[in-house]
Amino acid sequence: MTRPTGFTGGTFDRADPLRSDAQRLAAAVADPRARLLRMQALDPELTAEGRLVWGSLAEVGDEDDLVFLGFIDGVPHFVAVDPQAPPVVGRSPAVFRALEILPADEAANYAAARSVVDWHLRHRFCAVCGTRTQLFRAGWGRKCPVCNAEHFPRTDPVVIMIAEHDGRALLGRQPVWPRGRYSALAGFLEPGESIEEAVARETLEETGIRVRDIRYIASQPWPFPSSLMIACIARADGDEIVLDRNELEDALWFTRDEVRAALAGDPDARFIAPPPYAIAHTLLTAWVEGD
Image (cartoon, rainbow, N blue to C red; front, side):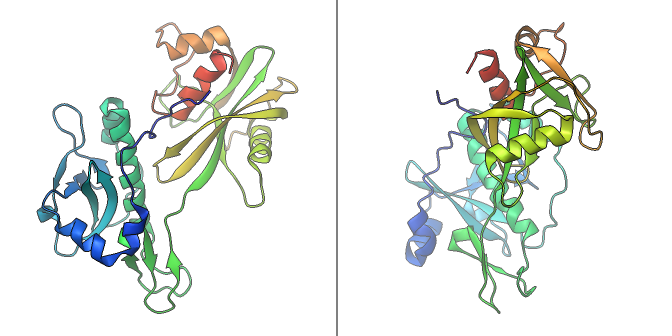
């Protein structure tokens, strides 16, 4: 069963061949229907109805670079990158308020734009020789004018998982989260690791729980700044938690009924569930339903 996750279902036709076709790209930029995504730093501007705001390319600054996002119903859509803007640190409360009301397809379109703009702000210099790089491939790469090295937007794979034992799910919490929130464990894949190996390692490191029989549930692009969340469920060999407090504030076992109550927003639930746009919410739902 394929489960939809937050930040998926975008409507861009990314039109990859156009990215290397200067003539077609110029025609897209010159198209009077072309639209520009309005953002403040990396936060989206929203209409009164809670949808993304699109302006015209006349709003592009003289020094701004353009990234071609794709076509929607034949209309080219872009986002601008200010080459002098500093990288954005952290996530504003405004972006999470926006994600609570954006339709799923618009959240996915925004996530793509946010991730690629954030990458440009953080990767202005060549990793090989240190020279300032220039956009190419319609903004889906940067090229060094000195050594000709080509650099492309990266996506970092992250495993996010539930360990289950005796009808209960193991969840943890970080101290920066809202009081009472628990969620699935998570961690970055390391070089030379499979998904299954990363699930087992991260679960053991953070909670002392050994797992096996790891199964994949779903994936999600996560634009903070640019990760691919890979959701899994694993079977635990035991239930004695040995907490790594450098990673987690707490970890507890929860029954299906307790998880179900949290997902339903029950005020008497034992914990607060992650928000619906987070894949942890999808993962908990899959576990409750017995996937």
